Amino acid sequence: MRTRIRIKSKPKRTFQMRVAGLGFRNGHVLVHRAVHEPFWTFPGGGAEIGETSDETLRREMMEELEVHVRVDRLLWIVENFFHYEGRDCHELGIFYLMDIPESFPFASGEIVHRIKDGNNELEFKWVPATTQALTELDIPPYFIASEIENLPQTVKHLVWDDRNLDEKGKSHA
Image (cartoon, rainbow, N blue to C red; front, side):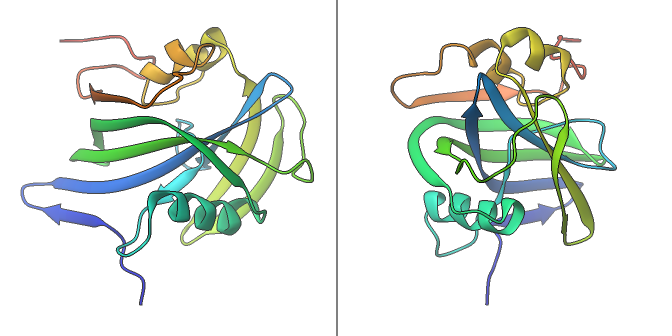
């Protein structure tokens, strides 16, 4: 039996562990969203008890992209705080560089893949891997936009708090 690493507590608080991958092709990075959501994010999903973070990423990409990805180096470990669906969320986010096979479709800015994931319909597209493009796209956690053109060479740990930011990463505190 698979058990996702997620704790919901009162009053309206959630902790989860999420693993995501940044896959690049032709100067673009792959992003996805649930079609009912206004924001995009990097593909990945919830870790499960008993699997390593790279196993989580490979499993999620097989489920969502229907391809085997190669998990490359670890980029960021992020203690991420944000609001979502009326809850205060605390997420341990683990972000890897990943290699997506050439067999996965590519078209700049167009939806290249759709899949049903539980109750969600997910859509995927390639966007320019630039600070400007990611800033214009609502894609939390927002610090990645500023680092997308110069990825860290060694693992970077940070605490990121989006609770006082608008959809473009601007502070309201």
